[in-house]
Length: 110
Length: 113
Image (cartoon, rainbow over all chains, first blue to last red; front, side, top):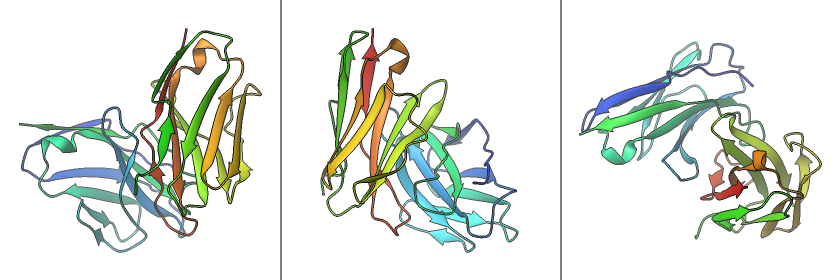
């Protein structure tokens, strides 16, 4: 599986958009980009995933560069409840090869 | 759906004791995963099952760890004998094979003293 690189921490003001970057320069053509988050003391929660096209759901948007070497998770209007560790994972399938790195600790500030 | 259900949520045990963690996956899911999370190593995949069959247990740390899935709605992770370094949060997760989403339980917080 491709290795992903994320900043260790980020801050975001409440109500503003949170843009979380992820580098996956060695991603293979059949590897998806997945985003999960883990709120303190809870299990990881699926957010969104994509292969090539940008994706949007009720939680977030995922922007993948044309060369697929990086992506950005966008939380359009961050709330205090979005404070969590966000994990970016590149994997060809849906769980067997998920390698969770240290992620980005997002702090949403009032 | 109630989600992935794990028990116990918290356990404190003495070194040398046997520990059994339990998991009920989401109904209809046919893949099940056990993960361990520590501050030092983060989230690690220990083992996963497809259709109740263990597929990859390469993440199981040593012979003291064993996992079973006797049926589609129940799995156990056993540690015998337990050691202080086994202290961690153990997560169970499940998915439907072919889907791109795995769902995690709330975890079992294990402390071995």
